[in-house]
Image (cartoon, rainbow, N blue to C red; front, side):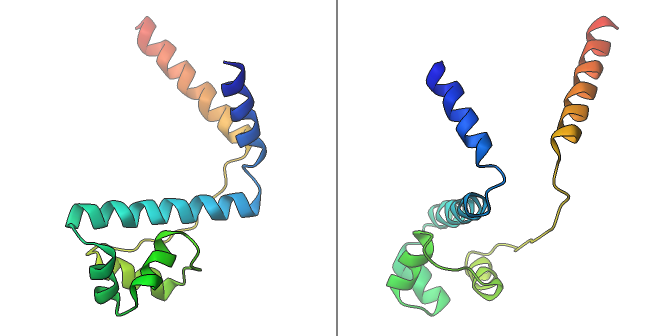
Length: 114
């Protein structure tokens, strides 16, 4: 348990780090691309053909070493028959998270006592 607690604490300390957040987004994108490729039974060479790029370019994308432009993301979405959605959302502050958690706790208690 000590290791898990330590890891969670370390992970929390990186939450606001720009590079960590960027790598998290890249990892999420590459995982979604890989998952969709598997669902559609598309290999790297086939995806390269769909994107009109070389297979090493697809490898670079899937390794997360490519700087994704909006054009690249939209082209990937089209090739994989997906919609691309990009959105900005308010950041949650620690205080708003606490208020949300408290309100959920109150609602659960109400349901349990009703």
